[in-house]
Length: 91
Image (tube, rainbow, N blue to C red):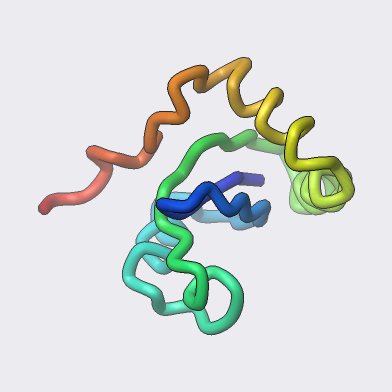
């Protein structure tokens, strides 16, 4: 489960079994829809789970949260809102 954002601070909550690949897909705008339209490209937060059911349940929970509650969660682990995948890929 992960949370990403764009330059204007729009938050996106998603789930994947391959975070490295999914972040690349978002950055390259390979996924049609919300993330492509709003240029979601910066990874702010992620959690890992033993199984897909738990990850999906957590994603659904977070999607029901307010923006403030999501930001509070993110800032517990990433107080400066750094792009956690900043150096994952060659430039």
